Length: 114
Length: 110
Image (cartoon, rainbow over all chains, first blue to last red; front, side, top):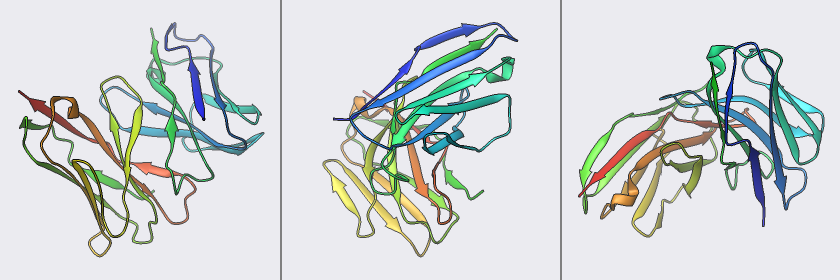
């Protein structure tokens, strides 16, 4: 069966520090991968998605970036965190565009920038 | 960007009640529809897909009205464990990603 792993579960980082969040998927090949952010009391905001190795689409311009170095690995990064980067970061995967089965989310990383 | 609109709630209902959520979407060419459930401080999880003819899964019934561009979720015989936020999700023609509504919070009380 397919599983998706995200780590760490929680993170407290100072303003201006770098960020690296990792997400891996097991049990499937060539998944579509997604990074979402959910700010406190807000909806899900799509940040990046990828349909293949090295292919990244950005939905929202900001100081975050994403990379997909391997088929089942998706990384979210920042060189310098801002206070406004605090939130709940969720990685998700889907078969193709997710039209049939939707997305499956990882358990998320709760980031607090202080 | 097309929108998916939901009543934010919260909906406060007693155990055993029937509750209905509606969701409207703006793109008439949308193809795929889902309901997700998100517990507090957890990731969203797929509750059910929504099919054109409507579909039922135990106490949950989903309906799609393409003419009016809305989706509904009916929960019968509410349980305390149904307390969560329910997210409406739509795929939009021309977009390769799903669009999530902001969710409707449900609180079921004893």
